[in-house]
Length: 519
Image (cartoon, rainbow, N blue to C red):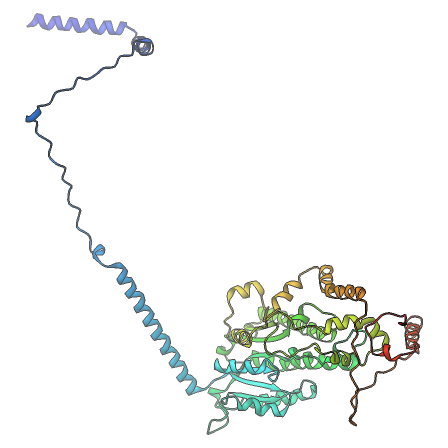
């Protein structure tokens, strides 16, 4: 055994020394190169594994595959989710509707016990928009103090109400009635509403009403037909100043007097929105059309006054520590066409001639054809909006339920009614393009008159044979110069026109511009 161990040890030493003497990396590299050369250049040898024959009839088939049973469903999978969700949603809606009815019933009982307190002052309730607006405000449980121009309209308005409407007389054409209207309004603030209730007619301090909002409809008043005239003919001392006073100065005087009532009140009153809504006609407010200078200038003054008042309130609310004006908002509403408007333009040839009765002969010759094209028109194909749209918009503003997107996009001025959006976007056009667009109908009329064989005329209406007073005669043009500046231009033209002998067939036509007489 000892020799065997010595032999194995010597063999081990020999192998170890031999391996150490060899270069192992070169050997590995040579072996790898030899294998690559055999794989690349050697024969393609496919080794086929011989098939092991089976046992034939004595072969036993493998057992069938048996799926393991699925795990039992959990408790939340066994619950019917869809019926349960429908039941939960239905129960939630039922509970929410029940709570809503209870709150509404509690609010009605509170109003019945304490009475309505929010007062909305409506200026110009006898205008076409006024009656529908008052009905809508009554349905929203507001107290309405409305101004009307005649004592007869007071009874007609209060008879249709249920005791929550008080009508006061304020004639816009008489600015001296503003202090009387304000005194009457102050006395109404101490009354107990409804007015037809029995008992003490004066309200207790706990149920004293307060002014919540002001809605001015007076700028929507239609000027007289005589105001449809070129600016050259407008009597600024009488026609324009009277309309400016009734549609601009009187509403501003009332708003001036009521602003202290809006900013003075309890914490609960000051925490709610108190809007002042000024309604203006959309067309004069956005685009000044020809021959509507009286209404356009008065409307522009109202819009600018509202903008200045809004900015003053915004600046004051930022520096006022009492937050008296924080929630007072000035909203300008451009009112379009509704199915209750009066017709502003004359629709009959007699009305067109009557509107031109105070014009001079030169004004008739110069402005007559374009004024006839402007005034005597067929009804517009635009369908007017319903009055309920206007009422809903005002009630939304008064109740401070204006959508957020309207506040972000339009600010404190937007339009309502047919045509309001059209004139809004038209006002953004460049002036040159807008003037060309407005002049297009008159260009077409001038082309038609130039191509016509016989010039279109509007005959003078027949003179009535009654003994009553007839229409005012057309004043003759004074040929004397009114100033040194006009002596060289206007006087000569007026005198030359008035010196032309009049004929029966020419005097009835103010549209014809032919100077030669027909043979």
